[in-house]
Length: 504
Image 1: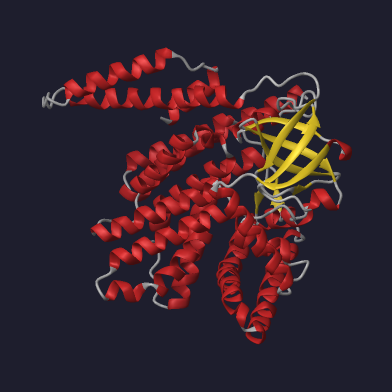
Image 2 (image 1 turned 120 degrees about the vertical axis):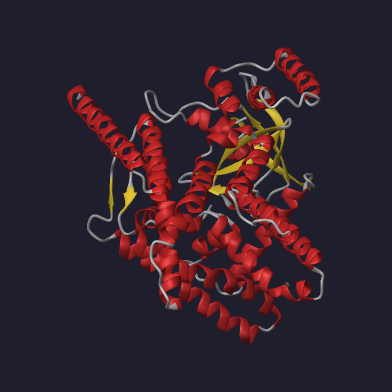
């Protein structure tokens, strides 16, 4: 299915009756093949299923492009718009995600007290010229227009201060809108409860997924320090919440209500996913937690590559453009790397001390995730963090305390004295995390730049796969293949460097 998505997107294939006829023909073929139990021709059924899923991916992608691309009128028009998400603070304007005629549009509105107060679900009347997404500068390498299309954005428009107004009504009653409004109320409570102005952006990103108030300097400091992943809600955050729910609801399992415990855990995790805006990484993590709970109920292995594949399948089925989302790619590659590499790293040393085992486990998880995502990070961001092992150990200690502290802060809201102590401790933990990021980013050689091309990414992952096979089997044939792949990777990299040097 992923191959079908990629091919349809690359060659711009349009949705048509050909897809439906092809899907129907393959379904009929597979139906008749079910009665054929010949072992020699078993591959025919597998090939038919693969072709069917390829066409499904291609059809979803072609249909997705048809839905997101809109020919907007060339002149200004009056539109009714409904705010979909929280406003994003930009240097000169507020970016307001809205829905216009069933399509997602980004409006850019001058900053004032009225635009700052916009909330999800607010109904607006705007008079503007909506344009399809386009690249900001001529000759830029980053395709910004395609990036917006992948996010489902059909148009953008600048709206002067005198060309829009609020109707004063809340017309969007969708579950996601209600969840985002609930998130806004929690953010307001954060401010009322005494969270510091320096800690507020990081805490809101770390616990609620709201990154609209994060400053550029903070983002860069966390990125250089190698802990930018803590600012983007992912499997780590969901896993911390899942662990808390598992501990709190464990008594249900002891009284033979394990099924009820799993239902409650899954329900709370999905509520959390809605509150933070259904980000791809959170949806993936919640899907995997749901599959793990179901596996535990049935007595099967709780975490496997199959669970990861099922999560990816349903996410791509829901939105095929997830495949081109950087967060989706990094999230799945990180988990895949941990599943494959973590056992190899962790079992290479036997440590008896509990603290030593925990530290070694954190190091192994960090190394596995960084090794798997390094090519993509260098390709998209042209940088690599040097001190990621040091910073991730400290972050692994602080982040659970911050998340559990935020939960405790909400729970103790009715006890002001106790909540004040929790808020002080929470502010201190976030301040230490900010200080860690700032200090590490100021160290010499904290990051270095390596330009990477797509061919290098492909060869790197092939080399990594051969290296895993050699580590598992310890055979000379795999060592020879590993050395050959390393030589090939170095040769390609140096060739591209020389080509770039002489072209300049």
